[in-house]
Amino acid sequence: MSGPELITLGCRLNIAESETMRMIAADQDDLIIVNSCAVTAEAVKQTRQTIRQAARRRPGARIVVTGCAAQIDPAIFAAMPEVARVLGNGEKMRAEAFAFDAGERADIVMSDVMALRETTPHMAAAFSTHARAFVEVQNGCDHRCTFCIIPFGRGNSRSVPAATVIDRIKALVEEGHQEVVLTGVDLTSYGADLPGAPTLGLLVERILTHVPALGRLRLSSLDSVEIDDRLFALLTGEQRIMPHVHLSLQAGDDLILKRMRRRHSRAQAIALVERLKAARPEIAIGADLIAGFPTEDEAMAANSAALIDDCDIVFGHIFPYSPRAGTPAARMPQVDRATVGRRAAELRARSSIRRAAWLRTLVGTSQPVLAERGGRGHAPSFAPVAFEGDAPTPGSIISTIITGLDVDGLTGRAA
Image 1 (cartoon, rainbow, N blue to C red):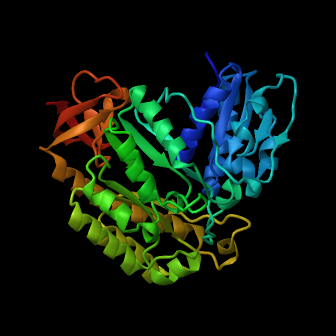
Image 2 (image 1 turned 90 degrees about the horizontal axis):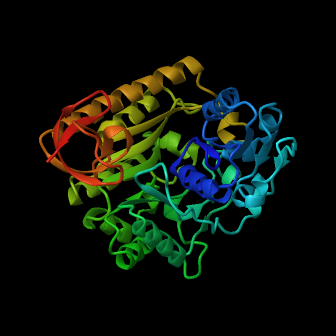
């Protein structure tokens, strides 16, 4: 094996940061780096299971745990006998943090993440395992949703200057990447901490202008209330921006949204989607939804379920609520776990029906599909496609006739 093994859980930002760690720890062949997620209690449990599995698979390897779960609760990972070191989110971008002997155990190397004033300047040279490249442009979050622990794992919002982002994307395009994804913890807050307070829309405009060879640009999760006129115009009018908008909605009931400390209403979410679809009908909507938030009754749950149809959500990311110690929602009256599970299942079922109906509308169309590993790829709308016949080269864009459906999405053949 050449270089460390990276195990990445959670968000697209973690994917981008894992590639950076792969580069800066390139000489550490006996290292397993677990980049953890803390978005739910289940994510933390999964991280612990992953660590144990890795230790059984590669006995003798040094296991380093980092990421949000490690930052928020380092002691639980340091106590695991399989773990050699726990790194904070600030420390994981320092090469020296990975350089220690196999017999040396320095349990926790961590600083105050709230003291960070800039996001990582380190940029990985290539994305060796991904057809598309992920570029971190923002980190941290200044908002305090009542259910969310992530600001305590990532710190306050901070942005990468546009010139650095543009240089990074130019290098990726020169290396052959045809699609780039902009990532962040709170992407739409981009720029507020930079001189002149540039917006995400302005950053996107500059990328498209200064990297004309970039064919496809995607944006990760957006906060609907922060989509201003400039960003809206780009999402709906710029063909190089892929028609897939993932919104951080979380709920479809106004009282629950207020108790979550979200900044939008149900009506505002619906109105935004209606405007997006009217201006660019092919846009596919994704959204995060939480089932069983504290105090949610059946009528409130029904409002969230109805939002799937009202906002034409074809990529529903459904999270059963789980209390996180230290968050206000954990102190609110809880919904019993069986009800939470049932409501999550109902949201997933409704989301699946909506998704299947949308996928059927794409059969017979021609789609430029970005080929990925395993003979699969994604259309501009992010609809998953399985290629018939020989698998094309990962990273290439294939004009594809959509021929039908399979259990994971669409099937297609090269035109």
